[in-house]
Amino acid sequence: MPGPGDVLDLVRRGRATTRGGILEVTGLSRMTVAQRVDALLEARLLIEDGTHGPTGGRRPRRLVVNSDHSRLVTATVNTTHTTTALADLSGRILARDSFDVAVADGPERTLHEVARSVRRLLAHPAAGGVPLAGVGVSIPGPVDPETGRPSQPPIMPGWDGYPIPDRLTDEFGVSVVVANDADAAALGEQTVGYPDSPALCLVKVSTGIGTGIVLDGRVYAGVDGGAGDIGHVRVTDDPQARCRCGAQGCLAAVAGGRAVARALSELGIPASSGRDVGARLAAGDADAARLTQEAGRRIGEVMATVVSVLNPGVVLLGGALASTPLLAGVRETLYPRSLPRATRHLTVALATLGDDAASVGMARLLVENEFSPAAVNARLA
Figure 1 (tube, rainbow, N blue to C red):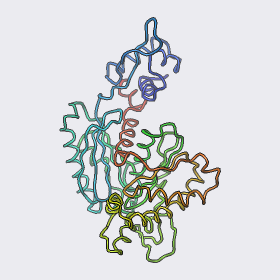
Figure 2 (figure 1 turned 90 degrees about the vertical axis):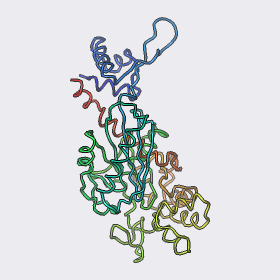
Figure 3 (figure 1 turned 90 degrees about the horizontal axis):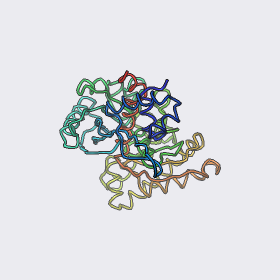
Figure 4 (figure 1 turned 180 degrees about the horizontal axis):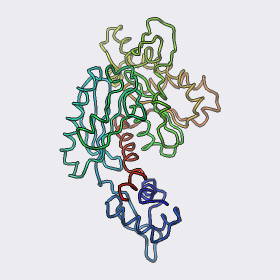
C-alpha cells in the first residue's frame, strides 16, 4: 500500500497536487489519504498553498513540497577549481562559493577545501537555520554507483577508490552522494530546460571530455559508472596523441581542452587547460575559435555513434570549451555521419546553465536519494 513517501513523490513530480488528486491516482480511501497527507504536513515535508481548481464552491487546497524543509550543499569539483552551492529542496541555488584547487593534488587536500567551503555556505544567511539534508559531490571521473567512490579516474591521480562519502559524512553527519560531473550536469540541464525529453546527452568538453546520459529522467551510469566516457575512445594512431589515461590516440588527447591548449601554446599563446582555452574563446581569440572548431569536428565523429546507438532527442555541449565554434564543429561531422532517421528529431545545442548545471543535477540526485518514497516511509513509519 502506498505510504506517505509515495504520496510525497506524487506531489513532487506533479502527478497529484490535491487530496482529491491523490485519491484518484492511488485508489486509497479518503481516510488513508488524509492520514498520509497529515503525516507529511506534520513533518513539514508538505505545505498547503492557496486553492486549486475551478471557481465556485469550496476549492481544494493545493499541496506543495516545502522547499525550506532543509538545505542541500553541492560541490562541483573540476580539474583546477571547485564550485560549491547551497540549494533548497526545489533545487534553487541560494548561495555559491568557489576556490582554486587541483584534483592532481589528491583527495585529502581537495576535500579539506570542500569542507571549508561547505561550512562557509552553512554560515550564510540563506542557510536559514534549517537542517542540512545532504551533500552532493560531482567529480571529473567515473564513479562506482554502488560505493560512490571514484573508479579508475584517468585525470585524478590518487583518487581511485577513495571513500569520498565516508570522508564527508564523518565531517557533516549527513548522507553524501557522489556522481560524475557530466552525469550531474546532464541531469541539471534536463531538469531545467528539457524536462519532457526521454533521452538527453550532454558532452562536457573541458580539460577532458565526458558525456552524461539521462534516460527517462534518470542518469544512466552503466554497470560500474563508465557510461559516456567517450574521451577515451581511440580515434587515431598518432604516437604524439598520448592521453593522460596512459593510452595512445584517445579523443581527449586530440580534442579535449588540454589538447587545444597545447596547440595554442605552440602558436605562442600561453594556455595549459580547458579553462584557459575558454577564457581565450570568451575574449574572441581567432586561433582559439579555429582550434576549438577542429576539436568539435573530432568530437562530432564520435558522437555520431552515440546518437546512432541511443537515438536521443537532445545533445548539449557544456564545459569550458562550450561555444559557437565547438557547436559548429560538432554539427559539421555528427549529421553527415549519422542516418537521417537518427537525427530528424535531434536538437544539438549549447548547454545553458554553465557551472550551475552540475549543482542543480546534484541537488536533484540528493532529493531523490534522501526523500525517495522508501526513505520517507521509513522515516515516518
